[in-house]
Length: 330
Image (tube, rainbow, N blue to C red; front, side, top):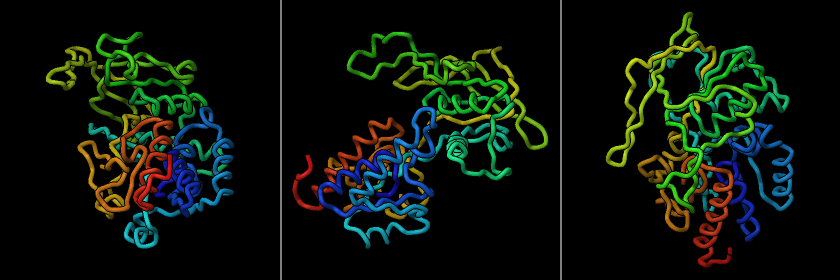
């Protein structure tokens, strides 16, 4: 496994129980992927994760931490050393904000902020120069999804002065729309525990720029937009006279992800990607490179833990079938 998140752990467990010798490579110093360094402790206490890792170790799964595959060990070396490789490194390529002032200090990707907070909660020391803190600051979170909510819960716990969470899309309805029938996923207004703790949520807002002084962000400039759907696509038209500016000391970008990070093992192995930047696989979860498989967010795009676990188990089934020429796994 390349990556020890929920897809990698589920796949490793399934293959190990089928009789294969499994090694999980993780670039960080501890196993767990986003379970460890993405999801805050107030949503997932890490003793639960540690218990599962201990069980996997006892069952015979081997773990190698501190290995950035594609840097510390090449994809070619993995293919030569193992009968199969499963890419479960997640969708780590964040969507950026291409506006003036993006380069200012105080503007960070959510996945720069969240792992640091989890490390701090775990008792790790963070150097002063690297510290990203919301304590006493005016915070703006761009993005209304789960990652944004995770940031929201963390900045509350740090003791921020204020927090606004802005979303480009219009607010979802309170009930299912006619074009969103069951059994489709219900696109409705949802609030997490972090939203119940406070902060301002606002929708239909497009950031037009950031500004500040002495190299640090101090203000976010935005405009309200109208969402217009045409030809199966949505575009956002600025509403005249709706421009506004809001003071900010910390801006967190939680606007989603664009598939797995390309430089490194993905480019080395030469696996094909689809139009959204996700790894292409067949019905056995095998990529365009023989005996290289993919599962989880790296394959399906940014999604939920339960999907990653399901994908990991399905990829294990496909991997076992290819290796053994059978369908021994249920």
